[in-house]
Amino acid sequence: MKRLDKKLANLHNGSTAPGDFIIADAKDGDMAFGITAPGPQTGSCRHGYNESEGCWKTLAQYREQIRAVITQDIVDIVLLSASNVEKLAIMERMFDQSEITPAARANDTSDIWAVRGGKYPTEHPSRSFRSATLDHIKYGRLTDDHSRPFTGADLGLYSITFTNNIDWDYKALQDFHDFRIEAERKRFRYFLEVFNPNVNPGIPDKKVAAFLNDHIIRTLAGVTEAGRPVFLKIPYNGPGPLEELVSYDSNLVVGILGGSAGTTLDAFQLIHDARKHGARVALFGRKINLSECPLAFIEFLRRVVDSEITPLDAVKAYHDVLRQTAIRPQRPLQQDLQLTSNKMSYR
Image: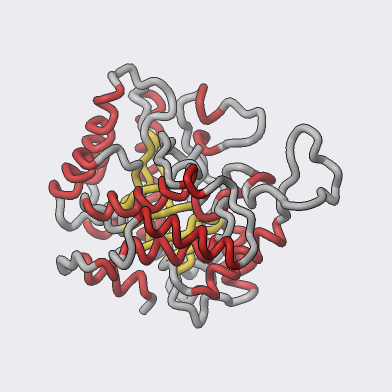
């Protein structure tokens, strides 16, 4: 059993222990941001394309970051694109002896097409789309036998964004239905990511959290145990909406997404507050990937969740690590100790 499966079993048995809180590193950004996913390159830009668009780390460097996280063995899930599942899980077998569960992004809706110059995330209602196939995620190729042992991943993220547009929401739910049927037949597990509307839903901002909660429960009410997600991934819309969702169904494991990078305190306070108000999972992508020292960042996320250190003290200790390892911080300590308005979306 992987660590994730043990924790899920404990959570379903009513555990609220800090040690059963699940942390995922979302390294699937290449399916959203393309070349910029690994983060900015430091030092000179070898290919010279840095005058207006910046200079970015390579795919090889991105994979090295992922390997380092797997070797560190603190997170419970590493979420990847299907191509990186093939490389790291199927070809390199990096998860064979690891307690970490590999997962793949199983669909890439249009609101995460965050390419440079693109208008998809903010100007067009989300449309469902799937680049990856479940066969390729599990086995690296098409197959008719889904009961045989796999070397890829049997866990994926499925994403849906409700927009209050009947045509697009209907299509999104139909595609989600089709995915669930296929996943059950192919013995594939998934967790469900539900974003806030990516375009104006025509309701007041204060109603968005309730709109999201109702859609989640309404959608899953028609799904029996065999087709339900192992957990949810949603924006943190505040303590009230989170507590409402968590208390409605005690068997529903609710997780929060990290949103944009923000300050270090943004990240540590978010995971602290989310756990306090009932979340049992946190999936942080850019907050980890764009930090100065991702491995130290992950360590302090775990320590905050385990109540070993407060978010404020964690920021100070993190800066101590940066100083000791001669890593230049992105912002001064006092600035990094400030909370900012954190954008709670993939974009």
